[in-house]
Length: 201
Image (cartoon, rainbow, N blue to C red; front, side, top):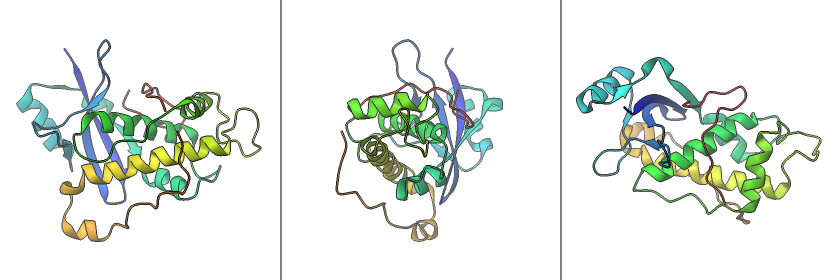
């Protein structure tokens, strides 16, 4: 039987909890959507549990994970080495890939290529955000590529949850992040745990 996990996302509008389903075999990890392809998101765990009960989904609620998108957005706006951990950026990267695969609406993530592959692998070396710019640190090109991807992911998240908040909440939200003049060019990654952060595994 497939297991389902609550995945709490903390963002500037407030917290929402999603239902995350790990892939089986060659199937990818997914976030649960309704029959119209809209993301299922809940303001409290009780409502999420009731939804799972109605649908016969086995929820492992004791293993709830959390992803805070606020520091991710701060890093995208100003990618300083000391602003965030590489592990948090990795979890956000994986989350946005799951989100992009799951929802039918919203802009897709930018295509990924060798620059993204290299940046992804460097995260596991522990020095991706090293201030000294050593061999294991992201190059300017890699930093720009990751920033562009996460920027698109944040915009996709805003689109996916727009109907889950009151109009007053939406008015308090700043406009989408500006798109940089230069782009970058792609890979889909698994969803491993990262240092110092929590992911849905």
